[in-house]
Length: 324
Image (cartoon, rainbow, N blue to C red; front, side, top):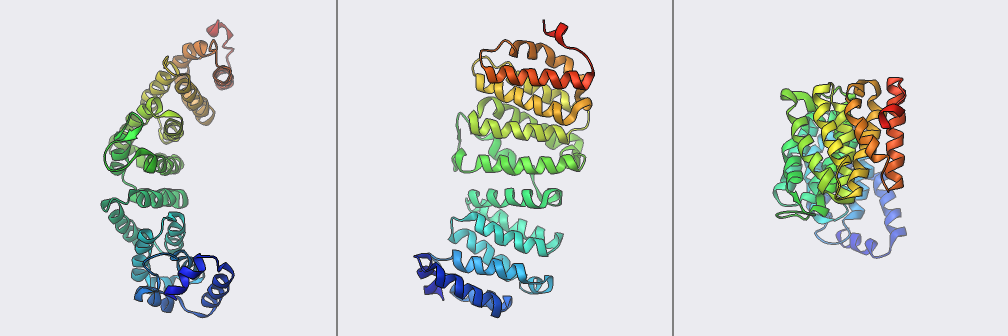
């Protein structure tokens, strides 16, 4: 079998599919896991095939079968991350296992994932974390730590993440996972962000506001999405006021029209999402909207007009006199 995996990867897809079907239909999960543990997973090419078979077996297995092989499955999962660059395939296996088990088993997997980060395999770690945030939403929040996130965000300087990992390798994946987490927290009344006197909210706001200004199109845009989601996790003017200030700072960033565009786009989405809840902060925004309506960039002018329209709908006022 170990030799066969490599051969399949080199073009024998039909044979791989047929034998995979036979194994899924006739070989029990525990037996197959035992075969993989004894070396059939391989140490070179072709590991994607047995991982794919294992995913199908996990999908068919019941909770009792998964629990009986849980330790071995997690060992194989961690080995899979080191043997293939296809992190999404490994993530499929991880999610398949997690969905069949409870919180206790989720915490075991999360603890094992930490070993990837400690071994400098941050790409695999953050890919898995983003997938858990996307799939599990608020269920994953108790396991989601802000400190490693802050380490990546704060290290981003001048287009690169200083140190071991280039920013393009992980920072966008980190922001993707963070966005999913913040959106889930917004549906959970901001319990994760607001714990410990809004500690996570304050930490994230500072770095996301900086990235909105300095991050360029990809990272700055991803930070903007996170700020919109962060606003949904807030619950009062006290929390929204510094966030609004960060967005207005971006809207008035004279050096780069792209930053101004990101700022006004974020404001538009927050106004549309929070509506009347955000109304007390609208007066601070109006002078900035007036300036943006005079922009040379047509897209910025359009976004500013949309912001004004939403403000008028929320307040029931005509803003013409304020914008003259």
